[in-house]
Length: 83
Image (tube, rainbow, N blue to C red):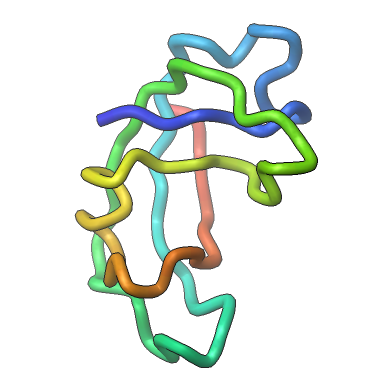
């Protein structure tokens, strides 16, 4: 599965190709108060998610997001570690 990294994490391309383990830790809005499904997903950083449009550390592909959270949430809180 794939994802894009924010400018800070992308580090001028240094993160490209790196693998990260992503875990949903909670909601960012009241629309879906408990979006997390449990578990985690490992993604490969394949692109940069530029600001101001990217307001997150990691922008997950739809497949990766759906694996760990309710897609109706749109945005979630995450923990991530490089693997």
